[in-house]
Length: 416
Ligand SMILES: [Fe+2]
Ligand SMILES: [Fe+2]
Image (cartoon, rainbow, N blue to C red):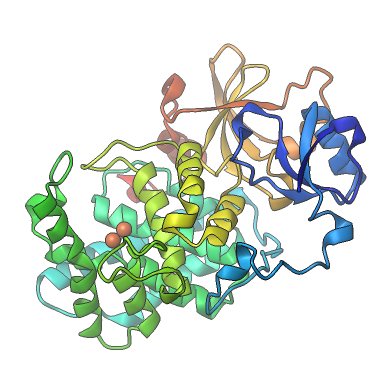
């Protein structure tokens, strides 16, 4: 049960499910966490006037199992996990960004080749796909933030390639969060990379049409799932899971998806995951058929659609995985300084690591400054290092690509 609490009354062992910050307006409450240290109590006291706690989830209640008719118990995936990842980061962001840039470039080149091959009537070399994904899995396991940041680059590569790489990266980061083993990550990563491969056989005029599709065009677009299955089945060594992801990533819990109108449990667990990530990347990317929305809006909408369209629990876990300031967000601090989120620790979601790119007068920092809010938010009497709001991409002329190229030394070829 949700209860409002003055922050002074907050104690260790309580489960906070919502804060009073404007960007956390109900129902966007997925910063839920157990207050397990005095440090967290202090942080919340600095940040909020009041919080909402979930009295069912406090430490006294952790051993209770969900009631038989609870929302959670209705969903019985074949591969469900409650075990979110506590895997430590093995590299820091500054170390990982360069190898991640190289991996993204290699994967991008590979996808361009693969699309050409399929257009020429050849099948997919599953070993090469596996190899491309294995490199990304290794980077994501070391530190997911670098590849995740590269998802935000609006480069000039073909939309289909960028979308495949983005969905693969996000799926791997989410799989890492869910505690998947490396072999599972490779399999779901291959599925994510190839989920839309059938689009190659959809007429080009439809794929590149600006504006909304007609009913007939939409039906043609929907054939990409079956085309994908055909292409993958005619290639050697493609795991069944990968084919299943291509077939069912547009199925929805309420049976309104396509191609088969499957419902909830009939949709494979890995396909539900890729389905969620696919929608998130589609709505946050500029696309011929529509304009993008920012990540906060996307997550709010997906939360509202969680029961009808998705596996509700997975949507909640996805929001928890990305956090309130996903990597790549541009944020303004209380004192007016502006930074790009480059890293988010799971236990310090409200205090990410930033690359500060504008001072309080919005004048460029040259070079930018890296600051870890988790280490500095308590240092300033004026509350200088607290995030005030999320800005839109492009505000104050901030070009993420520019910063990555110049300041983080990512290879130029990556984002030409
Ligand atoms: Fe698709
Ligand atoms: Fe897609």
